[in-house]
Length: 142
Image (cartoon, rainbow, N blue to C red; front, side, top):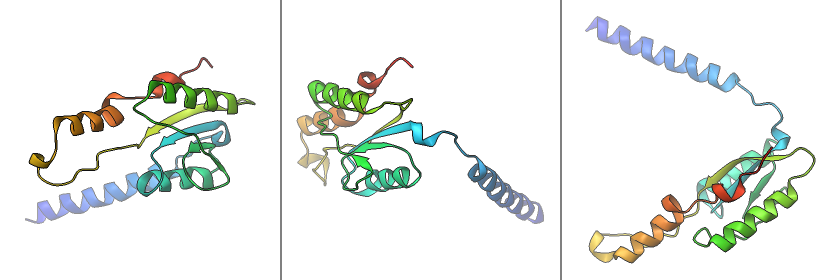
């Protein structure tokens, strides 16, 4: 029993030491690393956009703050993704580059038992989250 308590205490100490060391790591040149966030009207996407903006990272997203660029985007449409990529590329000047794409958009709006949901509902959800990705539209040669 004492051995298990010692292992648990050691694991907890190791966790906090690792977490402390992880938080000491910093990324250089954040002001040149742009981030594109889809679906950031509320929740995680909104908080991420505000946090990145606060840390000096250029953010392209649908949030209401002056330091964030609003980009119209329908993740289920190739044309919309291509237009969003064009807008982002046009705005990235002076050594800035797209560092991350956060696909946080989702259109699944039916909650409850599976019997209430059709195959089309699942297909629409998967199209906007798992299968559709704008990342291939935003790759550029650096």
